[in-house]
Length: 103
Picture 1 (cartoon, one colour):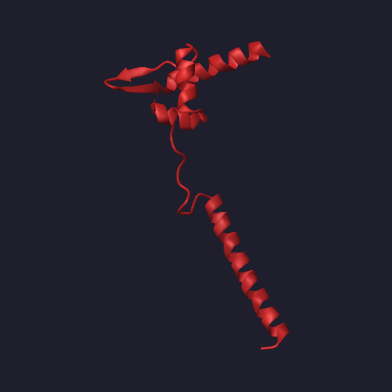
Picture 2 (tube, rainbow, N blue to C red; picture 1 turned 90 degrees about the horizontal axis):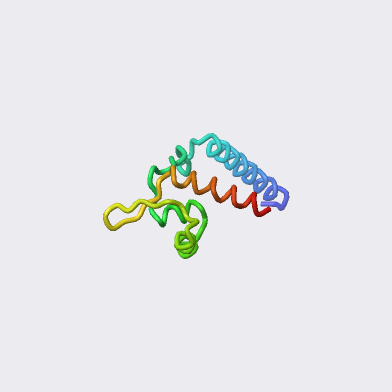
C-alpha cells in the first residue's frame, strides 16, 4: 500500500469516527444517551452527608455552623438528623442577607 493510499484510508476512517462522535454528542445533549436521564429532584429531607455534598461544604464546617447557631435548622428523626428543603431555603436566604450586610 503506497503512502498516499494509506493516508487517504486513515483520513476516511478519521472522518467516520468524527462523524460518529458528533452524532453521539448530539444525542447526549438531547438527553438520549445512557449517561443522561431526567434531572434529579431535590430531596424533601437531606441527610447531613447529602446536604454537605449538595452545598459543597465539609461535615466539619456544617457542624461548626450549627454550633455557632448559623447553620440550617435540623430535624431529629430517631437517631438520625435531617435538614428539610424549607430549612435549606431559609438558611440560604439568611446567609445571603448576612453576606450582603457584610459587604
